[in-house]
Length: 162
Image (cartoon, rainbow, N blue to C red):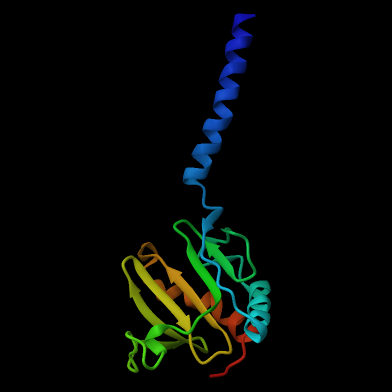
């Protein structure tokens, strides 16, 4: 009888411990700041969300927290996508960070602004009717490689525009 009590007690202790361990090492969710696009941009972002790939550069799609049609993640640490973000300061004339010569390149038919971060890069679409931002941790260098996975969805969902 004592053996059963000890076994039951272990089971009750193990479940919370496993839950904490899974949360610490799992890659199924990540906190992502949710943008708040309106009107046409919101419609394009919702369309993009439906077209996003289940895997990016070998990284499986997880669940961004909070859940939103304007965010998505892949891998751990997460590659984060946010759709409907404001125009980057570096592209905004008169802003403190305005830079008309900012680094940008075309990847599979989509123009991206490149911004170096403390750990990795932030890429933002340009010349589209909604701004899409993809943040890639340095662990996945060369970070630009993930952009090829997003090109078909961006081209299909977000029309060119200024």
